Length: 109
Image (tube, one colour):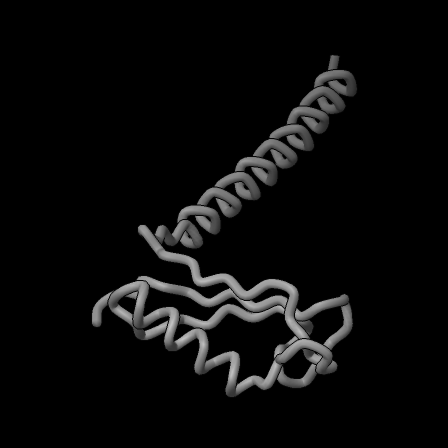
């Protein structure tokens, strides 16, 4: 199989943390190539977790989501932030230099 096509989203009932599902929310990338197989894998996952009604780790969300595409913007966001930081630092330096220039102009009038 190539890229992940299905993701299982599980959310534990309530707001507490549980050792089996992190802090109540977990995403699991399924190995299924079609929805029928994704459903079976999700069912097996539910059985493995034992998160049934009335249990301490009971779920209130159990969604199989189909992934249509993935887009990684991390590097673009990092580059944009670094550019903004650099522009801010350059503007600050320019402002300091202009203040020094005005001070010297005033001193040597």
